[in-house]
Figure (cartoon, rainbow, N blue to C red):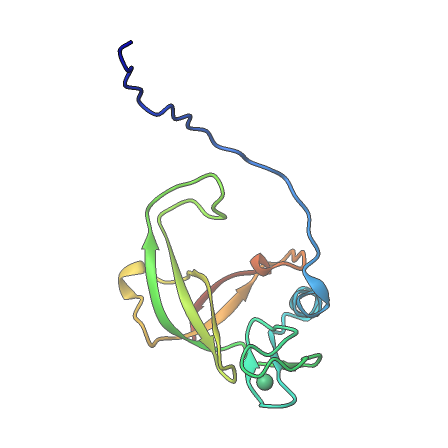
Length: 151
Ligand SMILES: [Zn+2]
């Protein structure tokens, strides 16, 4: 009997699956503060003093429980960025758009968010940024519409 060479069978597909999850008490406080007051907060570790943004309920440095938030100025520094040209159905924005890693003043960690209000060619690492909040906020990270150069 002759062996039959078989190519692997590959199906390509795409799944969009609705879901819900709890962000937990720390992130809830963080998002509610943005929604209700347009104030950005971070979690300060009571043991080692590390300030985590976005806030975490456990310090990633010393693993202590963190419960209190500290208010930040809202201003930060762009550490790095890219211009996104690739489009996919799960993106919050239609490309092209700029996204960057922003380290908030007073925090020891950074997060990614959109950069707007500026020509993409003028975006530079090291520039000072401030948040632009949506008028209608829903207690999620997109309540910050984007970060723009400090005016
Ligand atoms: Zn700590």
